[in-house]
Length: 296
Image: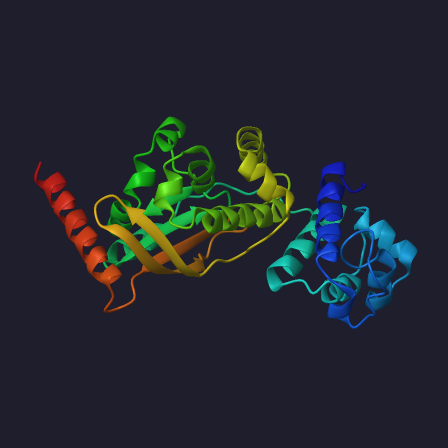
C-alpha cells in the first residue's frame, strides 16, 4: 500500500521547512553568496546524510515507506532535528508503512487511582488531557484556576473543554493566557505530534479541520509543522479574581492501555512568590465551594 497523499504532504512540508531553516555555515559548508531560496539545497542535505540526491529528493516528496531507521536517523542528524522533531519524523514513517500502521486511538476514562491522586494534590492545579487536548479530569485547584476556560461559551457549546478549541475560538483566551502566542504555538505543536502518532484518528482530523476553517492563526501555525511531545516550563495566566499568576508546569505521561494517550500536567507556584499566595487564595475558594456543595 502506497503512502497516502495526505501523509506525503506532511512529510514534504516538514522536511522542506527544516531544510530551509539551516544555513550552509551552520553545517560547515561555504556560503557561496546569496541563494535564491533560504536554507540548504537538497544536494547538500543528501551529501551530508550520505545518500544520493535522487534518493533524498524522493524522500522529500513524501515517499518514506520502507526507509530504514538508520537512514532516517542520518537525515534527522543532518537537519539538526530536536528530539521531538525526530520522533515526529519516525512517526510519519511508521504511519506510511502498511505493516506498521497502529490501530486508531481508543477513548479511555482516567483510571480512578489517577483521579484519587489528583484530588490529593491541594497546592498544584492538576489537569489530565488526551492526545486531542481534551481535558478529561481536573482537581479542585485546577477548576478554580481554569474557571475562565470552563465557563467560556465555546466550552459550554461544545459540551467539553478542549484546550485547542478554547485557545483559537474563544476571544477570552487572549486575556486568560498572558502570552497567548506561546500558548497557541505549544497547543498546535502538541496536536501536530499527535496527528503523526495517530494519522487515522477521525476525531482529531475533524478538530483540525474545524480549527483550520475558522481560525487563520491556527492555519498559519499548523503549516509550520512545529512539533512538541512534552511541554514543561513556566506559564502565566490572568485570573479575574487574583490577577496574573506565573506557574511552573510539568507534563507526565500516564500509564494507559495500548493505543490510548493521556497525560497529567501540574501547575505549581514557586515557593515564597506572590503566585504562591494567589494559589492559596484560589485553593481556599475552591475548598469553600466544595464545602458549600456538600452542605447544600
